[in-house]
Length: 62
Length: 195
Image (cartoon, rainbow over the protein chains, first blue to last red):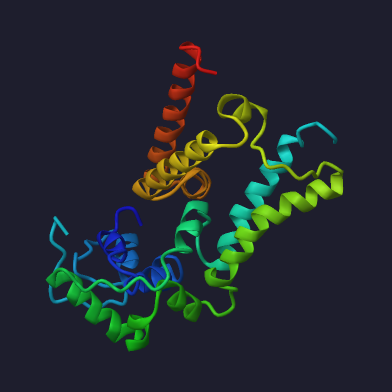
């Protein structure tokens, strides 16, 4: 979790924390980002745990 | 047990037990300062997205979990996703009351219980039992503790017990910093004769 770029972003507000509850702290094996990391593949910065891609990626200062 | 400290391992078992049981029951990691802070955070308005990225993430969240989640507080959403749990909302008051009632009941059972308005002879000897000074010391101490724990994102329980047990790097650093600071401060006071 410490290395996931999106984990910290899910703390931006309470609604976003639902992702953490559902995936990071819950069914983490269903997280697409986790699956890619386990398969030693690159994780797109805008990939959501549900496998969908965000239209914009997180900037470094966000 | 009269006049004696309770065995240290009672505390170890109690802390280890609650640190393990609390996340299972509530769905959240144990952190006492966060529990107290949450008492004053209800009804805080939801912040609007501040960046394009956050706005996109909010839209994706609504698409994934539904519009209701966007209106919920974290605890409401958490309890919806984990109905089998009591939920943090229910466990919080139980925990906070238990921190006071639990030791009192144990003290009664062991014959150690007694009412007292003091904080012990060390505190009383330094600041007095009643009056403006002990109250001022407690208020300033409370403000400093509250500021420090919010700044550090947790306290001795949240970082020192829950975070360290999970091997979280931030908690390891935070715990090392606050313990070394406390030890250093205690030694400085000791060396300068402030007892």
